[in-house]
Length: 419
Image (cartoon, rainbow, N blue to C red; front, side, top):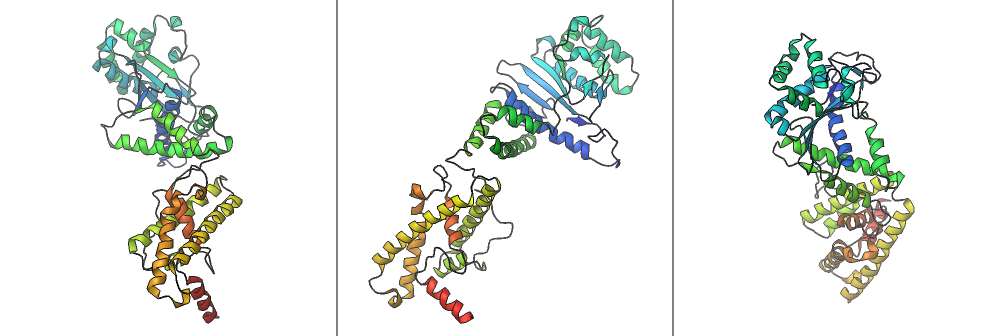
C-alpha cells in the first residue's frame, strides 16, 4: 500500500501521536493517482490495484510495470537508506525471482512526492539519469550501499539479492525507475482537469471530475473486494469521461438521481403532500403512489443539483413548466370533453375518478413520447418529466396541474370553510 510520513503537509509533526490522518491520505492518494495514470497511459493499458504492488500496469505488448506509491510530507527527501525505496525493492526482487528473472517482462517504478536527496546514489534511478556515471556500476553501488546498513530490516533484501548472478543483478537494477516530485493528492484534480478535460467547458470541469472520480472510486472498491476481478483498461476510463462530458452539452443535462430514494421510508398512505393526496383521491394502488413519490423526489433533487451547478436557470425551468402545463391543459380539455356527456357537477364520483385516472395515465406514460416536453432534447430519463408533473401538482394553495375534475372546486370549498 502507498505510504505516507507521520508528518503533516506543512512538515510539522502531528500533535496527536495516534492520528491516522496521514495514513488515510495515502490510501486516498492511491486510487486518485491511478485515475491520473489511466488518463495518461495508452488506452490499451490494463490497470490493477493492490495485486503485485500498489498499482500494476500491463501493456498490450506484455510488458508489466509494478508501481509503488509514496505520498510524503512536504520537503521530505529520499536518501540512500530510505525505507520507502528498500521496501519497494524487497517487493520487486520477490516478483523478479518468481517470474523468470532476465526472461521476465517486469519493470519497476517508484512514484514519490518527495525528492531524491542531492548526492544520493538513488539519483541514478531517476528517469533519464546517465547510469554510465555510476561507479563501479549501478548494481554494485546498490549492493554496496545496502551493505553499509546492519539493520535487520534489510536482511531479507540482502538474501534475495544473493540469489542473483552478477548479470541478473545488473538486469534487475536496470528495470527500476524513480519518479520523484510526483504531484501531491491535492494537485491531481487540477492536473486532470487542465490536461485531460480541455474539450470540456471550464465551468463544467469540476462537475465532470466529481462524476468521474465517484465512478472510479466505486470501481476501485469493487476491485479490492474481489481479488479475482478483471483489470480496468484506459479506454474504459476515456469512454466514461466522454459519457460524462457529453451530459454537459447544450442539448443535454447530467442524470444523477435515477436510483435515488429519500432517507425516510416512503409511506403512500400517510404522506400529506398535495400531489400524494391527489393520487389517493383517484384510488390508485399504493405501489403506483409510491412510484409517484419517488419521481417527485428524484426530479426535485435533480433540478436542485442542476441549479447548484448553474446548468439550468430559473427562466428555463419556468419555460419548461409552462410547456408541461399547456400540454396538460390541452389534454385535460380534450379528455373531459370526450368523457362527460353531462355537466361535471352531475357526474357520479366513479365517473370523475375514471376520468382523472385517464388524465394521470396520460401524464405518466404518453407524455414521455412528446419531444417538446423534454427539458432538453437529449434528456430522456422518465423521472424528470413525471416528477415535474408531480411538482406542479403539489403547488399550493392551488396546484398548477390536477387529475380529479373537481379538485379545484373542492380545495376552494375547503379553504372557504376553514376561513
